[in-house]
Length: 193
Image (cartoon, rainbow, N blue to C red):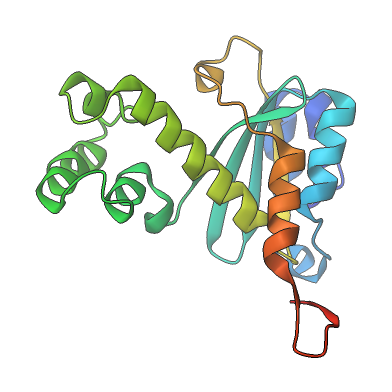
């Protein structure tokens, strides 16, 4: 998959070359037209890529991990898309629990929610289900991006980030996103938002 900021194929380059490939003139990157997530998913599946796709639009950064061409995890730099905030929004944890575990995030000892299971706040099944719903929400939010910049970093199949993969169905997610973006107005015409 070619990095849209440099045009260089970053899935088959040495890590030091990838860093050079992603160094870019910010003005040139701003002039480039974004690539839709649906196209990036198609490319990843066609090439059976394993690695980390970094998506950027404005100050928002999202990461999608792929294994064998399929998305297996998604994260974001937005506070509302952090696992703890997502649990709080869904009322699966209360404010004091949120604050207590948020300290672990700030201290750098947060490990993808495993402490919540270890302390009995969530069951392993609840954690997995919540991570799945959050990853789906993050991916669906990316489908609407129109000026997306991206970088792809190939990872070995045994990379720790790829552990505990979630089964994220890109076709189902795209269909759900389309259902939410298309509606019928009072005149029974299809309107795309």
